[in-house]
Length: 465
Image (cartoon, rainbow, N blue to C red; front, side, top):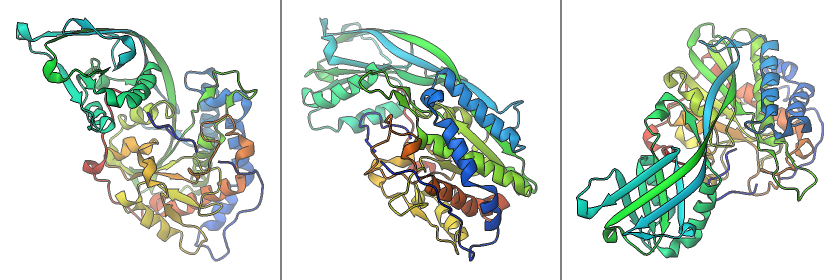
């Protein structure tokens, strides 16, 4: 799950145990196949491999993330899946650009400002801005003032969604929030390298802590330099072609990257194993792929995508979304952190953005006769609909939702080195996967079609940071 950019959350601790978790005999038709095809033993093997210390936390740009990708690809191949249309392998390669600040200077009205009062987010390596009212120049750089009573976070969010080049003058009363943005920007930014990104290469935002207002600016001069590094990453994407409705796609997804190795020596355990986040979800899509492949009767095409770069901004799903027509995706089942019992009980799962489509209602109809239910997101204040890979596809109108069981108000393992296999409840994880298999079967069979998401009600993706 993507960490919030400015207000990081601390999320829980459950013990590991094994038990059978089959549905009741009064369950709907097909449940026997689910119990046969999706076993606790195999789920345990998959999540154990992905969360093993030897993979060093599956950090993006590490050698180990490629080992994880190879494992996922092999499991897809073993199930008889085939690459996505237009690809000759399960690997969907893309590039990301890491941007780290090197230097920044700003003068306003020929007075140089102190570096500690500046913060910069930029998508380019260097830029030089200058403007003078006396020369009657037109400038592409827009100057904004955020006064003492203005909502700084909301205003910056709007400018970020707009893109372009901005100097933002912040009243000193915003110093505390400014420092948090400054710290975040100083860590460097990452952007997706693509043709669509080329037109936005000069997007930048400069924050200035000052009592000066826009009206008082007669001239300015900015010089900035960043270090650029371009790296290649992979999504792992596989399909089961549909029989009667092959042009319609049901997408099952999870992210397989995590945080890698800690950069501090304060703890003897330095590996962010990411067992729950999101080896659990990745194990789910692998086992769902095997289950549906054995049926050999799916009406719609089933696509299984293991995304990378979720933890650094969701760039794997962003790239994926540009490789196919979103209108062809009937629904997206994004599985995120299902390794521990939810507040609704062991094996119970909740769904983000349930009010945005009728998918949840349809899935619950399919679960009639079981002891399972898809619950509504119990943490709406956390904005979780936007914090995983479903958000990218939802912005394109796809009924794209994330399914989770984590207890955000109790989880002490989120983005911690303690998120390892011992913290999981494997029986609960197993039951969630089977519940998703049963509830999504009508999607696979082509019997239900959820309503599309209204893109006008979706928050835009930032263009600068």
